[in-house]
Length: 116
Image 1 (cartoon, helix red, strand yellow):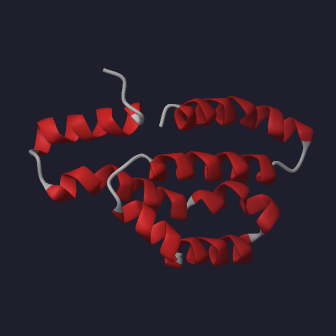
Image 2 (tube, helix red, strand yellow):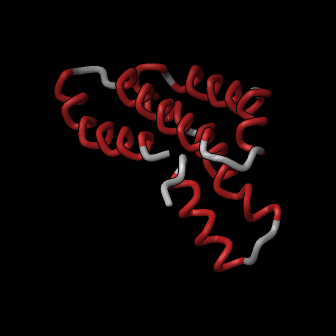
Image 3 (cartoon, helix red, strand yellow):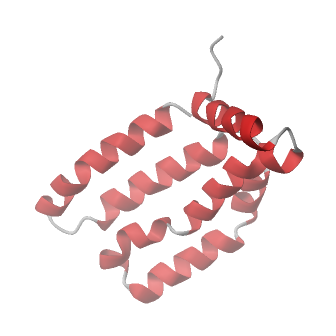
């Protein structure tokens, strides 16, 4: 059986086997991705600066769209986390050598995002 969000479904199935089938367990993966999404500006801290990084994290934290996506059981929160992480890694690279060091991470996150 092929599902539309294999990463989300496999993680949720693992949690269901460990913790039982409860409503909170079904939304745990999405909530965890929402929490991680708030910290993605740290990936671009060198270019943004400390104050802008903190401000962007607060905006992500208070965003109604982020809150809605992370409270919904499904794969969109993982996809949004992956896309935002890639953008922050690319934007945060200040020199070509830094981007080359980040390229394996970008490729890995891109693969993760495509699997969600």
